[in-house]
Image (tube, rainbow, N blue to C red; front, side, top):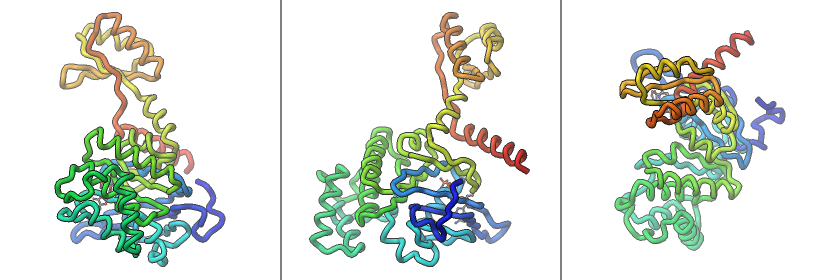
Length: 328
Ligand SMILES: Nc1ncnc2c1ncn2[C@@H]1O[C@H](COP(=O)(O)OP(=O)(O)OP(=O)(O)O)[C@@H](O)[C@H]1O
């Protein structure tokens, strides 16, 4: 972790959280710790991913950063402003896209929605109109600008959410699961838009559980699990970690599976319920060995697979635990 020497609230950083903790009080039973000791630093202009499975604490962190939820302890700064004591100064600097049904008026048109939000940001009518037109154009919604939002596809709504998020020209944009529920094409279009927005020099923080998405969009990612940061790396580093765990899935008879088990670099062969078997290997080279062998044996149902994000988390958690034992 870098030294945030020039305290308080490293103004050179877009987002700076220090030992952030958030507990939820529940009526019966113990409090839920959603964030535990979370310290992250996001440079200005960086596209930063918050990666974690459901319940990891991503939304809680996003809510705190967007000033709608207070931390239980710890501190956080956006562009050098204290999130708790200076939230009024922070809000105009932030764009927030939380998706879903919140924040859009379905019976109004896309244009009316954006003009409403422009007015809320205190823009003059003239400026609001110009900004609305520019955004409808930029986000590919111009043709449907005067249709009611209730007639929009999920992808179009999400683009409109994005337009709403940047109408005030924020320096920091918070996106919570922006492509959730989108079909692959709509998700790709939205990612391209996000890349374009990043190219305009904004800082973007994206919460996602999709490693591939983080890889495409982010300069760095922070992985969170059970409210704790377990890794902060460039996505390529994570991708390497994942690809090291590539394995081969084949459909073959028991005799052939035994011969595969005996190949160099094969760690195990586990039959799955659907009649296929998963061959785990210790290296990329061993993937090649297994593929060459089974293809030569006439196996046609063969493919390579990457582990799920959950499996990567487990590895990282394990690695982390081992490290903390060593450091004790
Ligand atoms: N209002 C609340 N009251 C009690 N517990 C909560 C509340 N909101 C979140 N939690 C709990 O805090 C933890 C973190 O939840 P959070 O929604 O921040 O995770 P997440 O990573 O965004 O997951 P998801 O993608 O499922 O929303 C979870 O255990 C969740 O059940």
